[in-house]
Length: 157
Image (cartoon, one colour):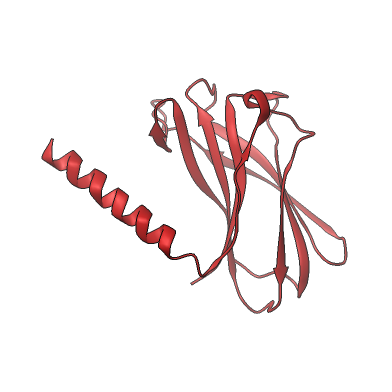
């Protein structure tokens, strides 16, 4: 039991330290999904204003599902719409569970949390306002057992 207490306190300490270091955070959003059913027509959006396009950013999806989620993965479709209104869509798969069905996210009760990396060290093509959009891209529509979804953008270190 002593081992688990150490792990718990280490995780708690790291969470507190991460929460205190918000200087590089540009966006941190989490939107509740009504009735835990995420439809194609309800994408998650966030805006980023880039003043120095030479800087790199890490872009994540904040994602939370219940234990009733019936897949080991999720396909998401991303859009990065720049000041010129050009859309750069990309579809990407994220693993949520191991082969044996064990969830990869951190859990509390029947909720599992993830911070899924979409772009690591991404450089926006120019200065200006960008709209980031993420939508579920699974065959099921609406997708059930999705509690919350958001975007997290930080300056890369």
